[in-house]
Length: 109
Image (cartoon, rainbow, N blue to C red; front, side):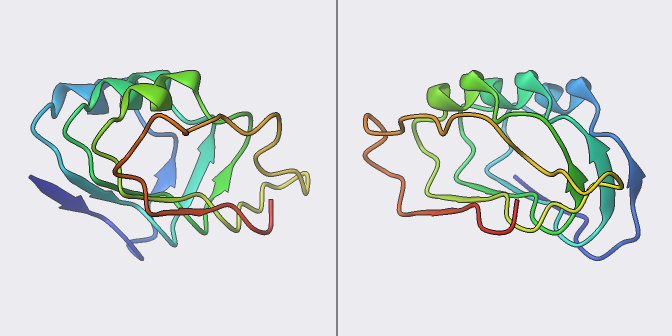
């Protein structure tokens, strides 16, 4: 139920096939060199409680599919330092219907 590859020098993009881990509750990938956009398919991990993708090189927007993550308690996407100096951007989603959400970390993007 937990996948933690934090601080593993992982490089490349997150595969959309991560959504096949449908029992996943905790996904931690902080402090790597993950680049590209966040796969929309992460929003189908309906049991996800913790998502930590902080301190990587992600770009683009937060997928609207994240609004389906009704059990999500902690979302950390802070400190994205892409090679062009641009991290995550766009409008912040309204998570007002998610009663479980306690913390969203987005600083330094």
